[in-house]
Image (cartoon, rainbow, N blue to C red; front, side, top):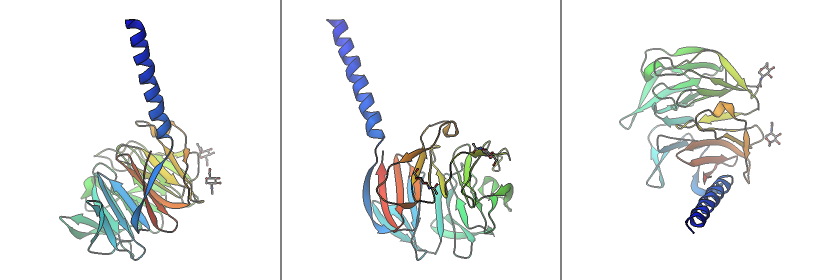
Length: 252
Ligand SMILES: *[C@@H]1O[C@H](CO)[C@@H](O)[C@H](O)[C@H]1NC(C)=O
Ligand SMILES: *[C@@H]1O[C@H](CO)[C@@H](O)[C@H](O)[C@H]1NC(C)=O
């Protein structure tokens, strides 16, 4: 009797486990009010900018506007960073935007300490410790660059995908050796827990869910009803911006 009981419990647990895996493979999305052209989720916070470059953050479930004007904003362990319409860089410090040396068209705060980004000519930079006096330059050119716990991922103007490994709190530039990844994406985002999501130039979403070593697995298309232009993942939520600037909050 005991053996049968244990066997049944085992089968039940196995069944529950498989169901959870199955549920995991389909997205559950809800439309969020408002419209944004870009969104970034990290460190438990969500920031975004709209087509008029107004800045918003999700506070108690509603969008709260911040002062200032940015075309791209990023939140993560490195803080809250953004770039304005003239590519000037700003960092949020106790609720105020503080100008930072240099010019970038896109900045990412996903690294543990150091922000990183790309400039108008697709040159790649990171700021050692988040407060060095000048940006460290990386080899190569990318149009979009995003960092996670140990590595940063980027896409080139030709939509080729590259990884920079060996990024630590002391070496924001990493190993300086780019590794190319198969596939083609027009934007890419690495989450605080190291998951990687991106959008291809047709507006389809791709992800890599292998926790510790996302670079060891392949891309999997994330089924989605509409075409999208931007995604960002944090704490089990995939935030999606449609080509019409609609906002969706999805869980897998
Ligand atoms: C990396 O780039 C080289 C040269 O462009 C190419 O031959 C190779 O197939 C690429 N590897 C992957 C995994 O895409
Ligand atoms: C984007 O992904 C979809 C789905 O895999 C594919 O059909 C389409 O060709 C891709 N677009 C480009 C430009 O690679």
